[in-house]
Image 1 (tube, rainbow, N blue to C red):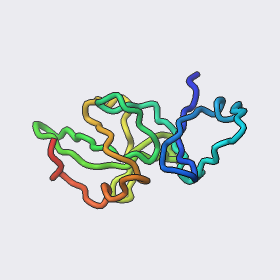
Image 2 (spheres, rainbow, N blue to C red):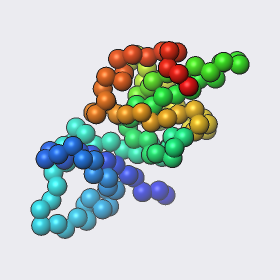
Image 3 (cartoon, rainbow, N blue to C red):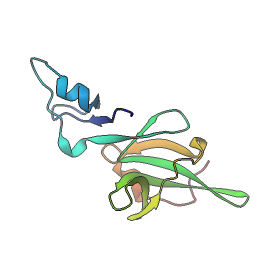
Length: 128
């Protein structure tokens, strides 16, 4: 069984702190870091075309293969409690994120905390 990985931002600065539940609970430091719980994101187990880890709340540039043409959209990564799986949110609608989808068709371009404006525009105008 794989260990669950997370990241979060402390109240004191904007640097991401990566941790596992085991390392977080075992931390015996003289000055513990207080992480803002609203920023904690779980690793999905997937990576993008540059082998960057994809976390809940990340924004991806996703390639959609339709016939002979490729279209690109921007999607937010999210967990779907009802389906019990990671997926993509576009315009407030949840879509399945196919685990077997080619990693070359997804690129990490930001996240909802540092780049919320990325989600304001969407559509096929994104160049490949």
